[in-house]
Image (cartoon, rainbow, N blue to C red; front, side):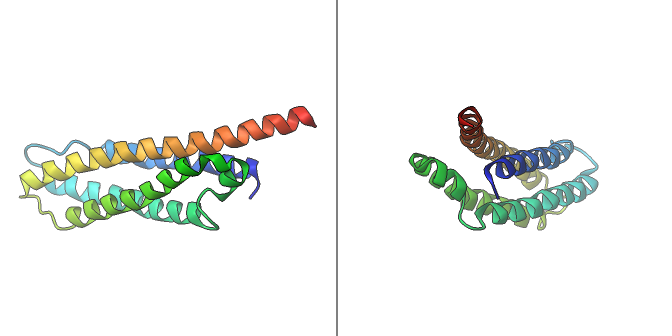
Length: 153
């Protein structure tokens, strides 16, 4: 994939993830009274959808070496790329833990429902920051390079 296609794909993925995150956030926070069964079902479904997309998204990003085109263009960005790559593992662990918890809860588990709601909120914050960092890194490297290329050509 060339620089322009990578930057475009990252921006499309970023938008898609934002859509999925937005759909999940629509169902937060957890209800304090009744309606927990429906809430739990909807949150499970929306979180599972986001999780499935994230698993695929991270696998595609890591295919052929995580951010290899970025590193080829800017080897000095290795520490930032390594940090983002490590975050993939951390995000995956957090996401899997939330997934497991969501699928064990019952509507009667009011304290655990409040806890998982807070964990989802935290996870979404981490995910937003991670995706934004990736998108900015890729876009800045390839936009800068394309600008240099166009002005030289």
